[in-house]
Length: 162
Image 1 (tube, rainbow, N blue to C red):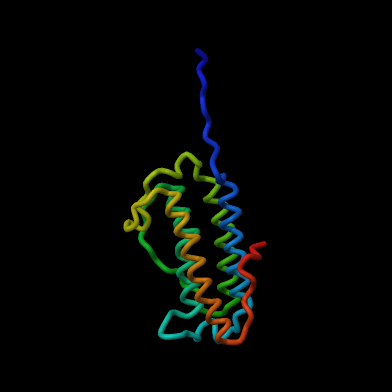
Image 2: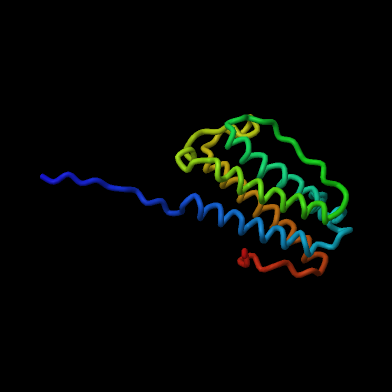
């Protein structure tokens, strides 16, 4: 009788997941770019948060969370101070992209199933936390798309992530 071994091929690799995530971040950045400056900070519908507030949340999750995961450190949630101009937000966004790449490279794929208590509140496998980062960004970008349409500004096509 012949012994056989099976190998499991992942549906998506770590590098492909990063590319997917960065594609979403590219699309969100394009969304931020076309937002009128004043409305970026002031426009809201039905008491929802402004685009600046949504962006602040996204900046407080992506790079800080990956840093915490890479260093196996449970850190508290905190939002950065980015208040001056939309250009400051775009710079912070670009800086976060570089940090994402840096910390992503430090997380071995073998750790993705490992439980990690994000912000000391969300105890899930690392992969699930990463999927949450992506889902949350899509959700917030969708809200910004609604704002842009209400302002008679055409948002970027959601499928154009590069």
